Length: 218
Image (cartoon, rainbow, N blue to C red; front, side):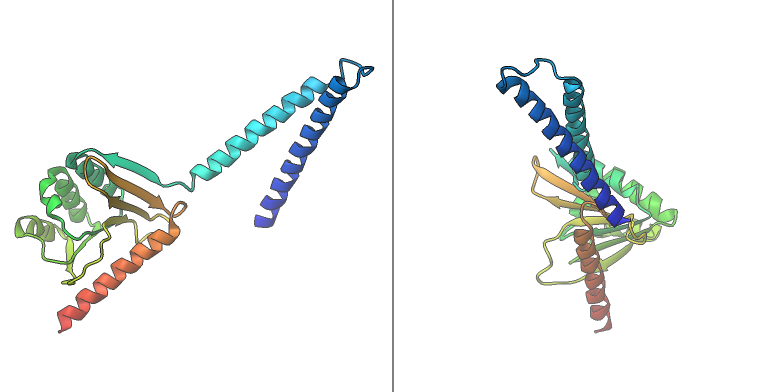
């Protein structure tokens, strides 16, 4: 299949180059040869086809390229970030939140409500942190079915991300946060725009759980 697609691209490109060369030769002939006829038949059609082909190539490449670009959101304040998280997690059949600290979670009523609702409906939700989350946030979520992992790392990773649909191969989405408000940036990757990054996020989640299991056995 890939060979057929490549062959089609090469054929299309060859037609574009051939049409453009014929058009340029026709224009040069009219301009630079004095005794040449001033009106070559079908030249305007050739020029029109060249322009249409160029526009078609640009649109085709742009549509293909956009598929591989991640979505980027800039949040001016914490409320925007919490609203984004509530909306983003609502699309997941599973949710994993990894953060150095989740004190912000206690300030997001809409997000807590969404996590509670999804956990009660059977969605697998996990929150991984280096230290224990405060009771007023943790206990209601645990009662709803959210599972907390505490790694107790002295030097926790700097990664802050939320991974959804990790149980559905090919449907994963990863939101990575960086910066502070008013220039807090969230980049969302899927399996087109960032399969390697999603794979690394899964590795971090798995290794963090391994750390938790090892510490619980000590």
